Length: 205
Image (cartoon, rainbow, N blue to C red; front, top):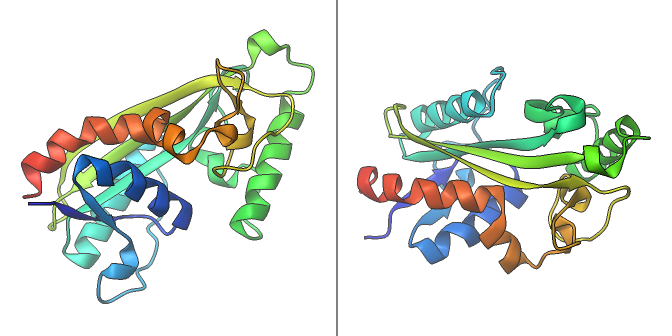
């Protein structure tokens, strides 16, 4: 049996990325639009941790849809900024505009905040925490993945979204310069997904 989960996000980039990550692992991840009764209201992500927000989303959408739901909360932690933007990554520079416009503003704000910070002190990582909820809205598993590097002096690359053009990896490329296949095996979401798979196979059948 191929378990089928609803992915508790309205972000089309995340849906596509998660489908690519989970498909080779034998798990189908469907968008919220596949569930009857939508569109569904977005829950208030008021937690101060990635795990807290992932749990909020998984529980809310599972209860609204009556389906197994997988949620993730992810963001960028920058050492020189004491972990910021962290859980505020998506709206670091405000919530107005399209997703692409917000991404561009977020990147500009981050680079401005790190102006004058030497390369050796620009360590950073993407973090992803996933939460799996059963159809009654009970959390049955969580997992965490990280993708480390440092913040580049300027954006590079056109693949990916969010802060991908700024996370410089040890091989000299940014996350946005990786191919889709490379990113889907190395990223924070890939690490969290691989850790979650045994729980999905055990609990959602």
